[in-house]
Image 1: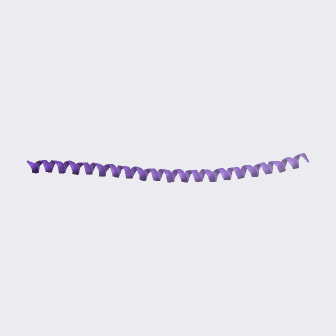
Image 2: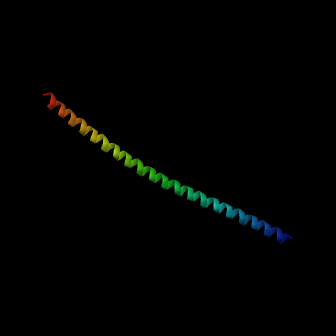
Image 3: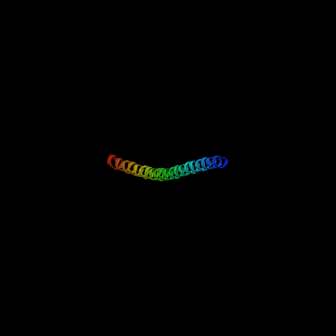
Length: 75
């Protein structure tokens, strides 16, 4: 009987270890996915910042050209 109880205890321990390992694997997968999402977010943010700088520069150039045209037109 002692052996049977020890076997059940060992099975319970092994089962608990397996569940912990599965939980650890799921957690690692979540961390990995989160890292990928963060890299994608940062890449998109950098692209949008570049586009914003480009649009601001274009807007400034258009404003400058409009000012020059206004000077020529009203001269």
